[in-house]
Every structure is written in C-alpha cells, then in structure tokens.
Amino acid sequence: MNHSARAYSVHALTATGAVFAMLAMLAAVEMNWALMFLWLVVAFLVDGVDGPLARRYDVKKNAPIIDGVLLDLVIDYLTYVFIPAYALFKSGLLPDWPGWIVIIVVTFTSALYFADTRMKTKDNSFSGFPACWNMVAVVVFALRPPPEVTLIFVVLLAIAMLLPLKFIHPMRTERWRAVSIPMAAAWTFFAGWAAWVNFHPQSWAHWGLVITTVYLTFAGIAQQLIPERRER
Image (tube, rainbow, N blue to C red; front, side, top):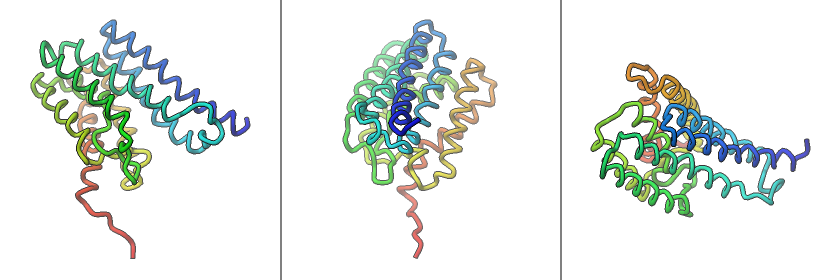
C-alpha cells in the first residue's frame, strides 16, 4: 500500500466515527443509554488513534483532497456535544428547566468553541474546556448527582470554555504524557465497563471514572500552576 492509500485509509477510519455517531443516536432515541454510550466509547477510541495515524502518514501531504481537521470536527461535534446533550435532556436526569438550560448552553457554547482559532495552545493542549460533554455525560449517568448539581457543573464547564485554562490532550501534550495516556486509556475502559453494566450503582467502574476524570480535568490546570523544570 502506497503512502497516498495509507493516508486516505486514515480519513476513512476517521469517517467511521460518523457511523458510530448514528448508531449511538439510534440507541439514544430508543433510550437505550448503555448501548448509546458503548457506541460513543467506540467513537472515542477511533478519535484517539486516528490523530497519531494521520501524523504518521502525513495526510495533509498524501491525502490533501480531504480536510482531516474539518472531518474530525464535524464528527466530534456529534459525538462529544450533540448526542450527549440529547441524552442528558431525554434521560430524565435533568427534568424541566434545568434540562432546557443544559442543552442550550452546551450546544451553543460548543459550536463557538469548535470554531475558535485559539483552541490549541503551544504545547498542543486545549485553551479552555474542550467541549468533552460525552465524558461529562458518562459521569453524570454513573453517579446520578442531583439535577441542580449537574446544572451548576455544566454551567461552570461552559464558562471554563471561555477562560485561559489549560486542558491536556492526552496524546499530544508532552508534559506528563507517560501518565496522561494510561489515564485516558483507563477512563475509556471504565466508561465502557460502566455502560456495559448499565451504570449499576455498585459497580467499581464508577470509582475508576471519578479518579481518571479528576486527573484529565485538572492536569492541565496543574501544569499551569506548577512550573516545568528545565534542564540546564
């Protein structure tokens, strides 16, 4: 297989995320939340591996007809924003007006964030909360906090999208990457496990989700507060 064929196969892999998004949406319409999240976890896995493959096979040079960044953003909006927002609204975890506030805030602010040219920092982290509402939704479904707590949490994260707070990209942020990649892999495992057992309240997966979520949420902010030690 030549370089061009490999590069276009990476685009094809990325595009499968749209298929998984549709399967997740069909499950969501049937209110089969466990199956919906399992499909979103599969899409999350694809999103995690297609980037390194795209850089390895230099898709910008070898497959220039397709804009991989645009393709990725379209699919990410479906899997990271639109479907999780729908799930939070229709699941009953946010009844009445809190649900309406959440879907409006999440979809509106995320659309602006995805188009923000300042989204990435120099170290390939994200500037502001990167609209990972799929991760938020998994935690909410697993822990089932009171609606008011979820609403406050969502609003705070939406505000964080506009602030100069750093959030790591586990695969691309070099600092602490030896910890970040295993944490991201563990989060994916625990999310899949929690969905597989239909978010059973006694599942140990919930503790794993809490620990990995705390790290992935605050690691970038910690990096801002803790100066990096430079070799002399």
